[in-house]
Length: 258
Image 1 (spheres, rainbow, N blue to C red):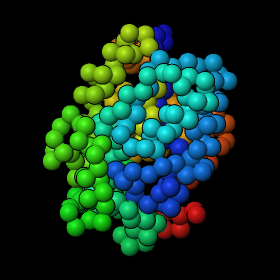
Image 2 (cartoon, one colour; image 1 turned 180 degrees about the vertical axis):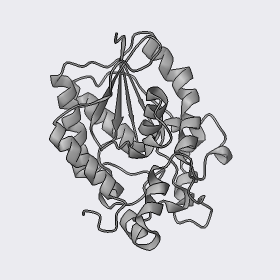
Image 3 (cartoon, rainbow, N blue to C red; image 1 turned 120 degrees about the horizontal axis):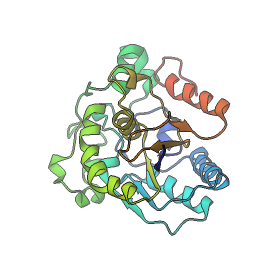
């Protein structure tokens, strides 16, 4: 029997999502389409009668902006929002800024799929010569973290995302859920996938096939031990959702859609 409801949300489309580039820890605002996605998500949740008690986001603007727009559309702007780097997108290391379709052409679609979707393969690390190194590591937001800036990742596999996310989940988010609060986590494709792997006990092999489109809320109904009592639900028009999933999956192909 369902005792708790948890909502996961991959942020609306960002500027680099639109350009099919690895965005990762580079801070990007939502694209015009991403703003609309977040607003439509909020309206859908309001129409279905959901109310939140707490919202958690990453430190990245596209995650925060999505949460703001969702809450505004729901008329729940007053809900407390807590931010942590531990909900950030996966750190793609040296791949940051590169175009996925061009990489598929140069390295092959299977290699790009492994870099993007595999569980325990870490891409090459970012170093100080990378064009976005200074922009990321000189950003003042990372002086607020619970670890020194020097200990922040330089590249991550999905496994490493889960490793840095779980302490925050267990120590900060779980107590909110167990107190009876309905929680929204507005984060990123990989931080949400990592959490789904943990909650749904998805295998390392099967997590490769889990795709979350932007701006689509995922409802998890959990028992008192925070185990799912039914399959996750992607809320909204199912035909549009399937088309959005295919669009994400096609991003790593040579002839990726524009």
